[in-house]
Image (cartoon, rainbow, N blue to C red; front, side, top):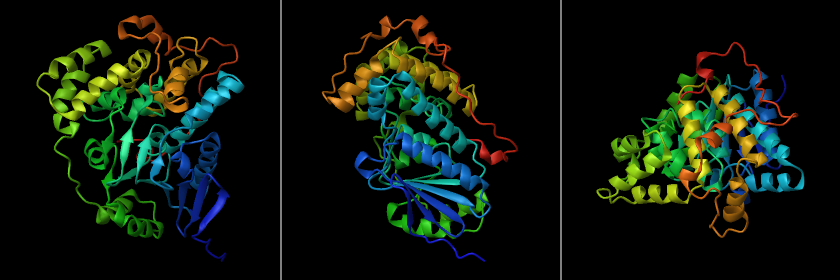
Length: 385
């Protein structure tokens, strides 16, 4: 019998560390100075590892966590913009195509994935975790989909998982880039468990020594360390009725108008923050984001990712709008936080232009995202919030 692998992190790749345990593997996102922002190299490595461990009968479950104060702050979009400028827009499309395919592998994975969300979880970090079976939040968790402030849209399958949150809470989170804490993540279903960070070492030790892929057994172990967190009094989640009333409306203009009318009676900080976020975000991004989440309600996770790939290719190509490049300049590069959106107003973004984001890209070499075939999957393998 071969000796058991060491439990020490193996430096297979400096950006993704691997801990070999008797019955599991722990993958650690390892770009702490960049808040573990996903590079193409990280995405490719995670893709390889998840596929390899799915075939390995000795691996019963996978843990995914981040090194430092973030789980993962998103995709490294600054690097994407740099590559587009140095090469062409298709290098950006290649990045997102690989990332979305990884998201699909996670959403259809046949073994349990436990994501430890002890810190920042944004954008691509949500894509790396929300599609997995177990998502453990802590008092340090901060969740957001901040794409509309960058001239992008909630991607990585967000039109699937946001559209399945209670009521129209997903539209609120996706359009306003609202930040949720661990308690709010648990309440709305983005997290499956809440475990105080002090208990995480004990939880991880219990999980890596479990010789089983049974989700019920894994859930029972996490339950032993879980607590019911306090939902702060000023949480937006207490006002789901108001959120549903406003964010169920058909257009972004109608949503913003309804919010402004409600503002007379609403004094909570989250409410004024939501209004200001909508006014500062890219008008084009807001409109395509709303349509994307609405379509996601009626589509499976694979369909959502294929559609989002069409959308992101239009964004990378920059023919319909250059807001993504302007948003990255203002927020990530020059950091003046004063993007000049074009068009600058919601009423100047036509329905015709919005529809074009959902159409095939007009380029002879462009192809639809081809997701890998996944057969004979057990019921629990498809993503469910």
